[in-house]
Image (cartoon, rainbow, N blue to C red; front, side):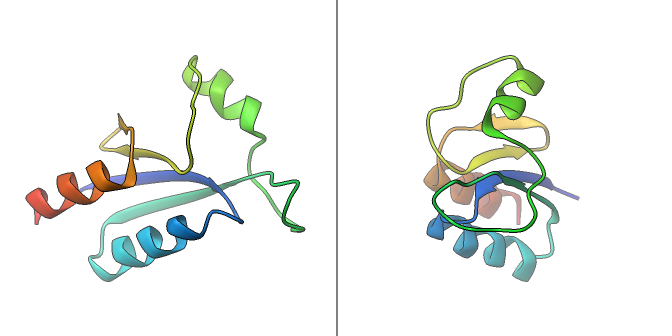
Length: 86
């Protein structure tokens, strides 16, 4: 089964569409929220700097996506990879 891990802020609208796509296609999905100062929220899993420390690298766009533990740099690339695996 394909494992998809997504880190994102609540205010990142394209993330919601991608999460819904993953749920509909029954991928093993893990969604972790990043603290978002622009969008009031009660719960978050990580601060942005924590994710960068965890992976020992910088990230320049949202959402941060890993498919089978491999970093994917854009939503378009993620959709392409997932469509190939169906």
